[in-house]
Length: 304
Ligand SMILES: NC(=O)c1ccc[n+]([C@@H]2O[C@H](COP(=O)([O-])OP(=O)(O)OC[C@H]3O[C@@H](n4cnc5c(N)ncnc54)[C@H](OP(=O)(O)O)[C@@H]3O)[C@@H](O)[C@H]2O)c1
Image 1 (cartoon, rainbow, N blue to C red):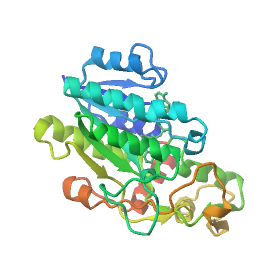
Image 2 (image 1 turned 135 degrees about the vertical axis):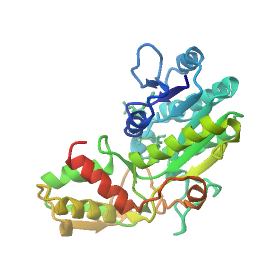
Image 3 (image 1 turned 30 degrees about the vertical axis):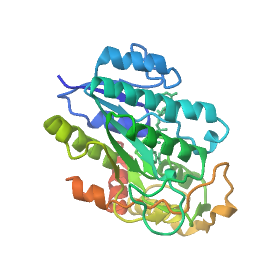
Image 4 (image 1 turned 180 degrees about the vertical axis):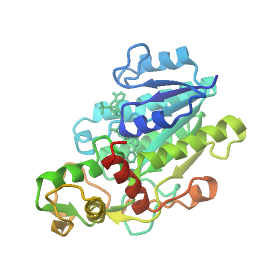
């Protein structure tokens, strides 16, 4: 039976991937506090031993230090979790000939200009989290392991700490809200990414070393782009359509600039990712971000 080892199974993306993996496979879903095997990236020797014990066909890494602002002051931990342990995992994957599926971020780019970034655009991150993700991409792509890297942006799921859930929560409490309007990107649901992962797994198991996804980076986000303000506005529009009880009206969201909203880590202004390569390679239907959002709001409000 095919064995799939998933790291980060309690994160928002990890949870969705776990839910979406076929029952035909034996899944080892590990997280920071797993007992039988180790999924804590601060203990990389134990993590590597777990890989040796399990001998997976596919390793999916959804673990990461994702708190962008805290990352600035916690560089040692970020380096271990986002660079060193994934690098060791990649090396181990190459030894056992396992496929490594890994996730990267829009934050690897500088954010200059208005054009969407390609998979091979230069990475010049603006903060330490972005630096760690870019460095990890470099390590994995030069490790000699079989890999597929999905680079995405503004990820949100029905559950988990994310912008989508924060806006819904605040809409119950606040009557006015400032939201940044000069950073643009594509809001991307965990469900959308989990479907891409499913396609990568199926194609790899069918075609092995001839899989079309092998040793590639793909930008995977829905069609279109928005500012955080437009994303918040669209969330509220959907909530109003579905008669969700809240205090905040969509016309009470106030557009602000990044410079008026100081955060510990700088953010790229332009997080648009070019999805042409992914659209040519995947069978996945690339929804617009608004369609993707509508599906997630429906699931959220119906407790699915
Ligand atoms: N969120 C986004 O907007 C976004 C955008 C682009 C790319 N990505 C990438 O997508 C991937 C999944 O992110 P996500 O959105 O699902 O974030 P998430 O919900 O924060 O998931 C990351 C998981 O990693 C875990 N983790 C933290 N420290 C760890 C450690 N020492 N050992 C093992 N696991 C540890 C976290 O556990 P705790 O929560 O308990 O610490 C969490 O469960 C990451 O590679 C991220 O960089 C995310």
